[in-house]
Image 1: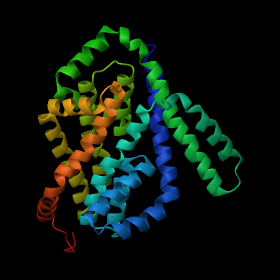
Image 2 (image 1 turned 90 degrees about the horizontal axis):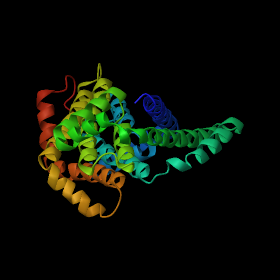
Image 3 (image 1 turned 45 degrees about the vertical axis):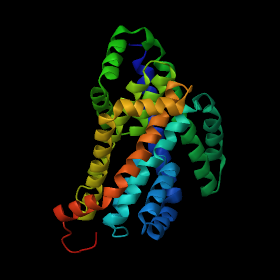
Length: 316
């Protein structure tokens, strides 16, 4: 275990730092454009979902998009009603990174790392420098994953790790709790799902175990959204609570229908590897969550508006 932890923690730190910096650079590049687009196209809930998904794909962080949405609400650029679709769309957009992780691009990450570093150091124009930074942090993100992949290999021989994995696989609820706790600690659902995909790639976790951890990660990611609502407006608080209730509703449904859901993923994914099964489950779970929740979203809005009425405005 002593030989695993330094590399695993180092790879995780690199991955988290890369996500943070990548999101920050992408926000700088797209923030003004994103603001105008969000303002223009969020009147319709279906367009709001689409905008939330696309923006999350670009920023590679659902938390960044939802927090940005809360900032817009506090600035009175968006209302709670407009934010609802963006939040649901962000849950779909975050699955894009899972598919990329499952593509095994980590071994090629050195190319964008080197090219991005050269461009960011040599570029004189600010937009060229930004492009170099985007490449650099993109490469760093997947290089961190590659380090994690290599670091967990010795765990195949660890009896303690095998016992831990067995508990996760035999109890979906326990697996979800572990996924939620890990996400709460490292503040990144992408990293938690990425770690599950890495374990699946090395055949160190079953499809069911990986999916259980993924379900928990969806709840753990709500913590930073709720923190962003502190001292914000009532509408911002309602957006944070909606994110929590939406994810909680989806996870409870996912745990109730856990084994049929695993069966559907196995059927859809066919002969693909365990890592692809987990990535496909992440995408399918979030899309199905939005589709199932969509007919009742209005009731949740009304309930939150009733429980938390705006102090100075009736707009919701």
